[in-house]
Length: 138
Image (cartoon, rainbow, N blue to C red; front, side, top):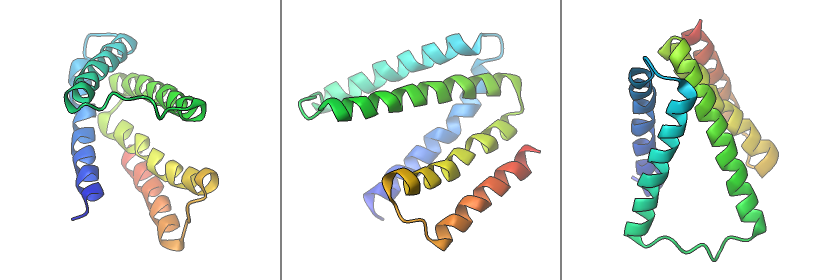
C-alpha cells in the first residue's frame, strides 16, 4: 500500500472521531469558545510533534508560501468554527454529510485553480458525493 493511502486512511479515521467527540463536548458550552480551545490543543500537540521530530526549520517559507499557508489556516479556522456551530445545533449525521460535500468542491477547485485533470470518473464521483450528502442530510 502506498504511504499516502495509509496516511489518508489514518486521516479519515481520526476525522471520523471529530464530530463524535465534538458533539459530546459541545453539550453545555459555546461553540466558538470550544473551537478556540480545540485550536489551542491542536497547536500545542502539533508544536510538540514538530519539535520532537526536529521539523522546525522555516527557512523554505517565502512570502508566497506563507501567504497560502496563512489563507489555508484562515479557511480551516472558519471551517471549524461553522462546523462546531452546526454540530452543536443540528443532527450530527446531517452536518457530517453536508460537510463532506467539501470533498467534491475541493475536487472542482483543484481542477480550476491547480489545473488538475477532472476526468469522467472523478466528475461522477464528485456528483455522487454531493447526491449522497443530500440524501443523508434530508
